[in-house]
Length: 345
Image 1 (cartoon, one colour):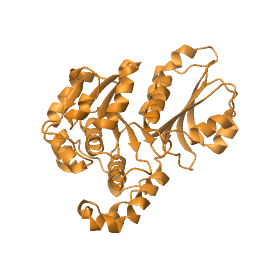
Image 2 (tube, one colour):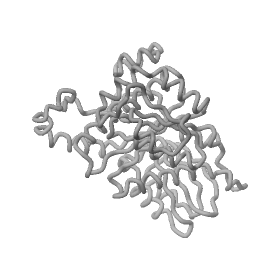
Image 3 (cartoon, rainbow, N blue to C red):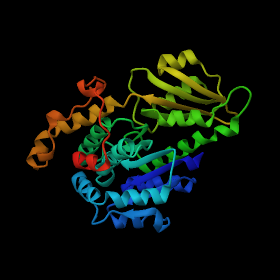
Image 4 (cartoon, helix red, strand yellow):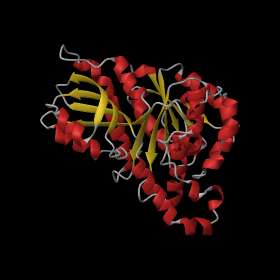
C-alpha cells in the first residue's frame, strides 16, 4: 500500500522528514527555493526541484509565494513525473519557515480543488524557543490551511512537545510506518483492511497516532495520545474514526470518557504492540490561540520593526472556523489552478 501514497517535501524542514520517509520506502519529491538546502539531501537529483529564480526565502513567506507563482507549471510537471498517480499525496513542511509555509497552502488548494487530487498535510509548529517571525509565519500559514476546503488528514507535529526536533521527525516517521503493518496482524478476530486505512488518512481534520506496549493498559495509551509529538487535542471529545491495532485489553468506556466518542472503529489484534489512530479530530485551536497571544504580546515590537504592514493583528482570529458561512450553501464554480494562483498569492 505504500506505493499509493506520495509525499511532496517543501523547504528544509519538509526535506528532513521527506528524506526519512524515503529511507522507509515511500516515494518523495523534494522542492525548495534554496539550492543549498536541496544539496544537503542525499537522494537522486531527479527527485529534487529547485524553484526557478529561488535564492532561499529567509522565512519570508511573500518571497516564496512570488517565486512559486511564476514557476508553478514546471513544479507541477516535476511532481507528476517524480510521483506519478497516487491515491493520496501529503505536503510536508514547517509552518514557521519561509518556503514551505509560504507555498504549501496554495499547493494544497490547487491540488484538491483544481486538480482533484486527494491531498493531506504534514506540518510542524514552532517551539517556544523559535523566533517571533516563526510564530507569525505559522499563524498565517495555519489560517490559510483552515480556509481550504476538501483537504484530507492534517498531521501537526509540535516542536513544543520535545527539545530535540530531529527526534520528533524520527518519531513521526516511525509511528507513520506502523500504520502499514496492518496486514501482519490479520486474524479471524478482526482485520483492518486497505480501504479502512485510506479512510482514516483521507478524513478531513487533524490526525493523531500513539502506541503502547501490550503489557500496559488503556490509561497508558491515553497518556501517550495526550503527551506525544503532535499538537495537543482539543478537549471537545470529537473523533470521527478510530483505528485500533490492539494487544492490550482495551477499555472502551475509559477511552471515551477521557479522549472522546467516535463515529466508527476499525480494529484488529496485534501481538507486538498497540497502535491507535485518531482521525477527524478538531484542529488544535487552543495551541493556535497560544501562538496568537504570543504574537499579540509583541504587537509593539512588530510595529516598531515595521513588519506589521502585512499583518493585521485584529484580523488574526480564525478560531471560529466551525461557524457556518452564508456562501457555503451556494454552489461554487470549479476554480482552475490559474484562478487560485491569482487569488491566493
